[in-house]
Length: 152
Image (cartoon, rainbow, N blue to C red; front, side, top):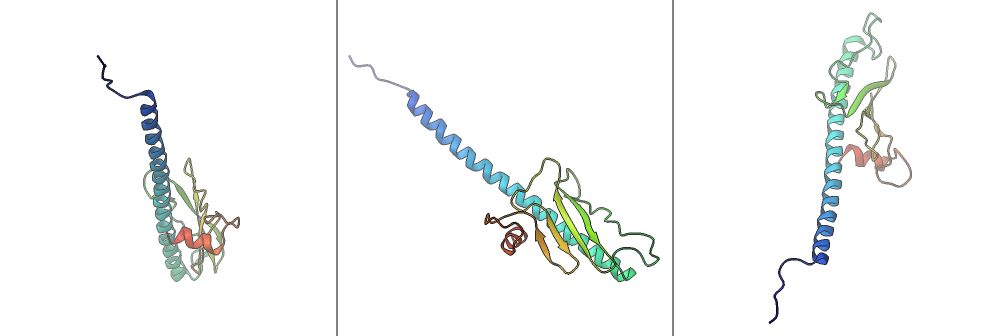
């Protein structure tokens, strides 16, 4: 009499585990990329809002660096982190400011990193920049990197 076998062999089980591990690796990488892009989009929105604030400040005071009396510098109240509420993933600062120009910067903060784009910048003339090498060509912050980080 021949006994019928039931269940899985060890090899079949190992193949199934390997397939699940590969799928999980792909899913985790995709999720991390999505969360980075989402955080970057929030940082870009806060940078644009801060630029609007700086332009209103300039319209009122005739300069970016201080108020009309020359005593008070503009304060990015409520626009110092992205997202605006909760755990900060980017810190928003005015990295360079004069009477006629400014540069806003969004830098990854805490445990959050953005190796693809790095720091995002926005100037008073609307010039956008990045410090990372998004396209992997070895030249950080070139036009292709800016295009990839700001328009994706």
